[in-house]
Structures are given as C-alpha cells and as structure tokens.
Length: 504
Image (cartoon, rainbow, N blue to C red; front, top):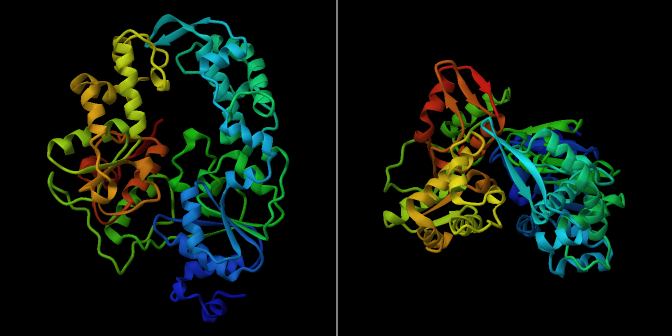
C-alpha cells in the first residue's frame, strides 16, 4: 500500500488533512509489523496515533505511563482500543492476596531494619579530600535495602542481585563492597517478604508489576500503541519485546529526561524500523530554531520544523510583563521565583514538587534543632544544619546550595508559608514549573529561568547531554513567545559555533 493510495482513502473527520509524515506512519502501521514513530515536540503524535487506531482492526491497546494520560486517551481513541497504564494491566493479572498488600501499612525504615535484623555499622565518608566516619543505623541501611528491591523491580532481571544495591558516592569504594556483601541477604529476604501474602508489610505498585512481568505475560491485544517510549524502563521493554503482536513505539529520544530514574530510551535502543514526525504544530520557526540548536548539540542531523502557519517569537518579557509560565531547572529556583512573584503581588501557581519543598523545610528545622532529618534523602546522613551548609559548598553538594541559601535567607516559616500561599492553576497569573514537570505541557508565553547547568568559556560550551535534552523539552513548551534572555550566553555560544564539551 502506498502513501498516495492512503491519502485518497476516506479519513476520520479529525484527520481531514494529514501530513505526508503522518501518512507514512499509517502506511507502516498497516503492514502489521512492529516499528517506532519518532515524534518531535508538538509534532501531532496523539493525532497520528488516533489515525492509526482508527484504521487498524482487532483489539487495540494504548499504554501510557500515568492514569491521567490513559483516561484522556479513552476520550479520544475508538472503542476497540483499550487505554491503560502498565500498572492497571498488571493489577488484573496478579493474585488478589498480593495486590491486597497495597492497603497494608508500610514498614518504617526503623521497623524494617529491626525486621531484617540489621545492626549499626560505621563507614568512611570521603569529601573534598577529607575522611570522616559516619554511623549507618539499621533504619538507614533498611533504606538501601528498600531501594535495591525497587531497582530490581525496574530491571529485566529475574532475581535480585548485589548490583541492585546502590550507595551514596561519598562512601569509600571498599566500604561499598563490604556493605553490598553484608546487605545482599537482606535484599533477598525483603523481596521474598514483598511477594509473600502472609507477611504483614505493605507494598508499592512496583512489586506486583514485577511479579506480573516474571510470569512472562501474553498481553491480550492484536496491536499495542506504547506512548512516551523513551521513558520506559528495562522491565516494561522486556514485557513488550516478548509479545508476538504488533507493537508501535512512539516517542522522542531527545525528550528522555528520566535517565536518573532508570529509563533506557527505547527510541534509540530498539533495533526496529522507524518513521519520523518532524513538523511541529505547536510553534513557528523562531522557536524551532532555538530547539534545533540543542538538537544539533545532541548530534541530531534531522531538524525540527516549525509550523509555517504560525508566527512565534523569542522576545524578552519584563518583570511585570504577561507570561503564562516560568520554567526552572530545580525546585530551589522554582521556590525563589515563587517568593519573588508573591513579593510583587502576583497570583502564582506551582507545578514543581511542593510537597518535597515542605519536607525539606521540615528536615532543615529538625537539623537546626539537633535532630535527625527524615523524608529527604539528601539530608538523611547529616546530624546538624552546619554540616549541610558546609556540604552545599562542595562540588558534590552544589545541587543543594540554592535550597540551603533559601532557608538561610528567609527561614523555613517563610518558605512553608509561600508554598501554602499558592493559587490554583486556573486562577493564577502564571505557573512556575520545573522543566521535568513541564514535559507534555504547553503554554502561549514561556520564560526560561537562569538555573540550567552549563558553562560557556572562551574554549567552548561545557554541558551534559541530559541538560541539552532538558533544555530542548523546556524551550518546546512555548507556542507564541519563548523568553531565552536568561540563557542568552548559551544561545550565542551555539550560534557562534563554539565547541560543545560534554560533561556530566
């Protein structure tokens, strides 16, 4: 079947004018084989999937990462396509006495440590050439064990292994090895407890998903549409690659920003034929040009094309100028923007991790009072606030520097009050968001903050591939105007042809 033949066939009403790229994707779908659709930012991914779903026969399954997206898809896709999350699919096929453990109370780290029979051990903390000693309580070790089980659950491995135990970088290499050997039996025990219906500890959703994956499931569908495939972990990919049915993987390798969470970027790794959606409908050429600077730095040879019917700009927005969103790199910068906005009398909404900010404030209060900090992993190994202040001045602790400064400058009460003064998104003058939280969203007018990680020197631009992908995601959220004044040195560096030096 040719693209030309398809274009003359009757289309659903919502696809009265599909592009050649969308028709090419449909053409591949009609062949009945698995393939990838690489969809650039704003390039009509959902519309294309709807077109494919409308034309394919048999039972279809659309898989999304979260319930909200799956529910939204239900309103858009035809009746023969079931729209679900991976977890809801697994939930239906795992014994009820296991899923019933979801409603049981979780063991606290202290109780889990006691349950696993852990004892306090001393390790060396190495920072900035200095060695100090830290006592790891049973509760802190229990967190390592819990995290190891979670790490195992996100992989395609069939049984927990010592490699699933991951420790902070400041612990000396020899101590890490000893800890790994000592704690591995506890990891095995905790996994067995998790899948034992008689054990009283509650479980998270990752446990039954893993249990389902280990059963080597056959998904009851004639074709599967897997959205945002670049964010899949090895577990999900293992399940899908085992299916004998047609699987269509949809996503954008350059929007993979969850590597730290175990994502494997299926859009690059899967050895399947692919087709491209490069025409963005969201914005015009000016914004596309900015996005292409990041794509070029990522060594992408195929550019993103702006919507020829849309005019976009990259003008600077004044402090009180109209904007719909401010996008930051970090939660700390989002907080700083929130305080500034409230001071200027603006009604501000926050699309960042407000709960985490409140926990950080609470943890800081505890440390200032000489108590342990719980609920914030970054602070779990400190005994007082001055240690945190010192740590934030080191290279390793630099990501906490802005948060520490906010606490020192304003106090935890002011910060907590600011979070509690937020306006609902529908009533706000603008939204403050992190770039991570903004993925999948769009606004008319977007301003980028100045806290992205890069360094422009006379020799070149030092920046990580992860940061380039994050900036690509951030700048492609705008439809009409993108304010890039806070990263103008980076943009100028790219335009002048400075060498890109990939850092971490």
